[in-house]
Length: 277
Image 1 (spheres, rainbow, N blue to C red):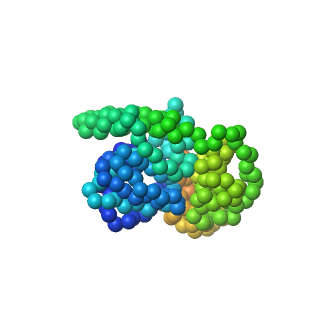
Image 2: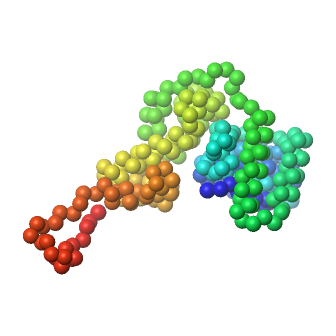
Image 3: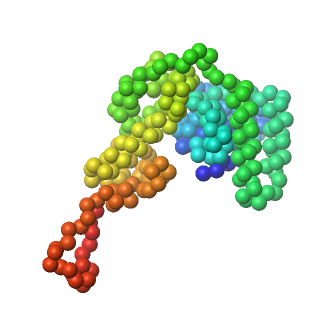
């Protein structure tokens, strides 16, 4: 899934949601209000916020406002390949301001986005523009911890995740378990596992779902709910991206072959048989 850059105003009525892609919101004019998993702040012109994937956030605009919004899936080119280290920006919510250099780059971006590129060129250009902004932000925001990362008790964390798979797990919940701030916990976790906390939780959910698909006859809707997915569709989408096939296909592939009566060997006698899953 590619990145998307869009420019919209925010309504004055407070709204809230979460989504499975990362997001950066930069206020171009006016102001807005954001609260991300309890971290809140007013965002004025040439300021912005980082919204990690699956973080519940509340937002509203004030009067005439305009926002530049970057929607960034974890598998987008702007966050993979040679840009893969940039995903560390989304280990925790943050608010930031743009210095003069980034304000000039923002003006350049708006000019580029206004150009009439064809569809494929426009998608590629948006990835390059997003990656440059992310790299510049990462260089300015820097690391949150200057000391050596602390070793985390992954056994305890794994146990907590397994016991709360069906719940709305947040990075803040895991950080509290380790008695660390969310940002410091995320830095330590990535250094120790190579994954962000949310990537790790998602992998645990998918592993648990796979085990239930193979070892039980529970409906896929029930499996989705028990492993923390919003619905069967969300489970199927995540499953295909990780395993290359749908949960239903996996269950069908694992089903035992139908037993055929040895005396019924004619094509006609087999035609009426059905394989049950």
